[in-house]
Amino acid sequence: MELFTYMEEYDYEQVVFCQDKNSGLKAIIALHDTTLGPALGGTRMWTYDSEEEAVVDALRLAKGMTYKNAAAGLNLGGGKTVIIGDPKKDKNPELFRAFGRYIQGLNGRYITAEDVGTTEHDMDYIYMETDYVTGISPEFGSSGNPSPATAYGMYRGMKAAAKEAFGSDSLEGKTIAVQGVGNVAYHMCKHLHEEGAKLIVTDINKESVERAVEDFGAQAVDPDDIYSVDCDIYAPCALGATINDETIPQLKAKAIAGSANNQLAEDRHGQILHESGIVYAPDYVINSGGVINVADELNGYNKERAFKQIDSIYDSLSKIFEISKRDNISTHIAADRMAEERIASVRNTRSTFLQNEHSIISRRK
Ligand SMILES: NC(=O)C1=CN([C@@H]2O[C@H](COP(=O)(O)OP(=O)(O)OC[C@H]3O[C@@H](n4cnc5c(N)ncnc54)[C@H](O)[C@@H]3O)[C@@H](O)[C@H]2O)C=CC1
Ligand SMILES: CC(C)CC(=O)C(=O)O
Image (cartoon, rainbow, N blue to C red; front, top):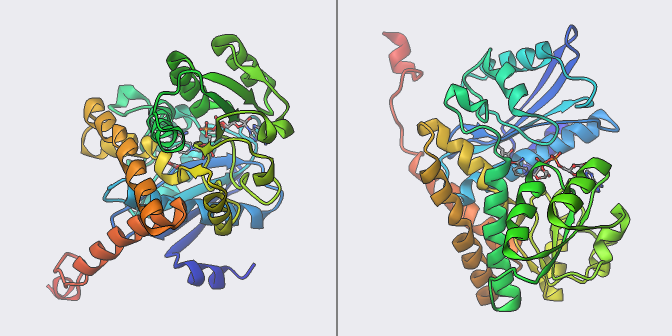
């Protein structure tokens, strides 16, 4: 891959490669756009097939955070980290502390939190080296792991999608097919179960499936079968790109509402869903509960305030569905426009010169 060509095409600001031989750290921090403020986005730890795959994942996830934070109305830009490694085998305190020092080196341009493969405990090690980390243990005044907040936002967003697809936002009696019952989806299933939804679940991790079957009476299916099960709503909650040429024709669901980032393999798949009459809740809008929650820490965490903002995911999605119908555009394009308009208006405001400690005049003093 031609890295600079890619960065130029999608307007990335910075990519940082971090290596620490002693701890085995190999991390890529991608900063996409900081027009709205410092880049906030989680750290994913995953076993990638190649370094290029890891770089592409970091880049795609960072851009997603720019749009997510903008659409959520946060004064934050978009960034994300991937750490190359197996979260079950390759973690050690030094690795996260070394990573924390790289974050500190960015001097506030990037703030991190959890994502797939990282935990509150890992964030606590990062916090030993830098303040630019959220989602650390609550005893430090933090909001803790963002997954329950993401799950609550997902639940609210799924209700908005149900209203659009079925005319009522009640999920009672609806069948929901869940791909990946990890941290977010487990909490989401709890909300759905309490409302009386029927759950069909799959996961590559046997224990996660067993937990959902036991706790929520879910029906389990094999990972490859989840796309074609009879259901009302499909909830992709594992990794990205599962909405693609192969899976769309298999789907029986009338709506897609899941937590996974970058669900559409390519933008054109959003258009295919639109033309097929499948209501697609844009991933970065419906899954923004976690980032809204951790972002609240930056003002001194207030759970009530954060969850009030997470509640509004319902209204944001309803507005996106409305624009999609009004302008006959896919929901992902409607969401992108909303985010891009906000970034453009702030960029415009910032074009006025503002004296600060780094400007040439203050340096001469
Ligand atoms: N944790 C959070 O607050 C947020 C998470 N997300 C996104 O939501 C998704 C899930 O995140 P978490 O629940 O935190 O991660 P997790 O790692 O706890 O859960 C993901 C689950 O998907 C399973 N999985 C992986 N590949 C699979 C496959 N091919 N088929 C079936 N299952 C598979 C894993 O075994 C795991 O149980 C990720 O895409 C993440 O980026 C987005 C916003 C916030
Ligand atoms: C703090 C995380 C929940 C933010 C993030 O990385 C995401 O929303 O994907």
